Length: 228
Image (cartoon, rainbow, N blue to C red; front, side, top):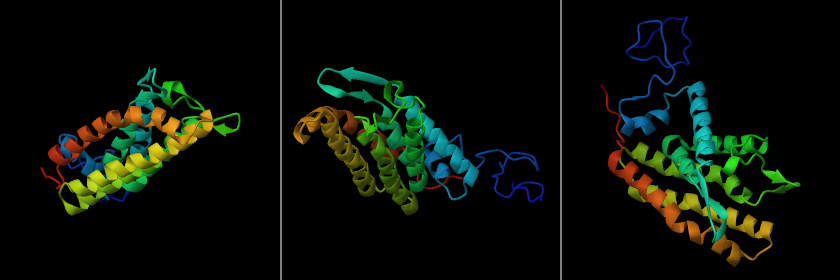
């Protein structure tokens, strides 16, 4: 039940189960229905403050996943769960919020916070973008493209597999293109060599993440709100 008292800010969401006069942040989210979280977190009922909180949360999630890293001898680019968080951001947030979350992540790292892979804390080195900078600046675009596919499914009221798959694949293109181009520039190698380092070893890795997330979003999630 919503409280109509003038003493309660109209921008806050009121939990249906709370007594009159009390409010709770993210009160519109049905926490007992995980398959519906994406609907609630991208809903127009979210206040500006709540949207800011989700933007910051997913930016932090990306930073956390970036620390799960391991290297391989066949590529100078480390394997991380960073892109998993980037894609998840687009899965749960609306397009503009997903883009903002990615931008916040890159900005915080550029300002010196150790949020990049392996506690990386700078975006520029000697006045130049770091070798992995091409990937980083593409992350906000990738999140926004994934969010576009999910937004279309939410508006349609069902899992639009075609729209989602187009956006999943499209989301990785700027990451691969920007990342490879700048890696080639940074290491002074041709595009083919950079592609061999930065794309080929990650195709199966990234496809696996996309497949798992696509199965979840198309087979397990609900696209019509369920009321108590």
